[in-house]
Image 1 (cartoon, rainbow, N blue to C red):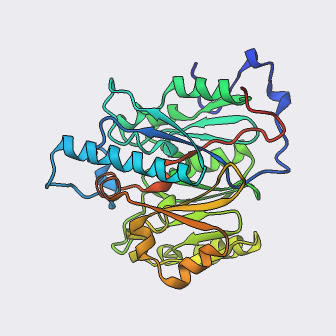
Image 2 (image 1 turned 90 degrees about the horizontal axis):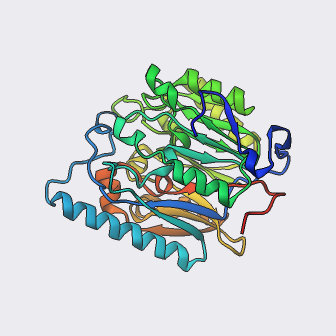
Length: 338
């Protein structure tokens, strides 16, 4: 079942239609259920390397060794989070398709508390194979899904918007933050914000060489009451001031990081709840070790930190923990399906 761009597909067999949209008056910023994809063909992706400056080709290990090490890092991360009673659904990647970046599902799908699911247009052709109808159908069996918005036909126009890699959602205040890049098309971003009725906060962000940062979520992570952000990556003062002011207006404590720390994936973290409602921020060991004591203390004022080791996934894949976790939200006044 595939939608035309910008249109919705009601799941009529669930007896839910567009008139049943759930109020967004009591939205949550953080979820207690994460979906992760266990990789089958993880490795250096030639199709994404051109605009992901975080990727480094590993010449010391074979393709099979890299794949096996990535799977072990994945399994260790899942075990570490489950030790803290964080609910994770692990889905096996499909061996039938070559999807070296499938471990990063947050780029092709997002779920929302009003019962909507969005599917996103992806820059790399082999990443488009990550979109799986069986996962959408599973979500529809788990939660009351009102509609699926499939934006992927924009790929034919060369326009891309890679989910919660491209966009950082302030779900409570209904704001979307995004930096312009080859994977974040400004026109498509504004169309999304208009359709979903969220405030657009678009800006530019570049690395030390002046190259567009490929995903917003490598330089910014938004929790319920704090934000980790590299304001130095935003070159234009007006945009930098506007973004910082908007974050302060929404009562977020700013934890500023440096470009060097961004290169260690210190901006690529995610706040989650466990099954007892206790919040945690998950980050990689590399990110953790890059942060100063005062920065770590600032984050700990809001929640405990869980660091996980992801050396191969970060090095070869150019993404970290936030990219690996697709948040599952569902209407808070409608129960999950048993």
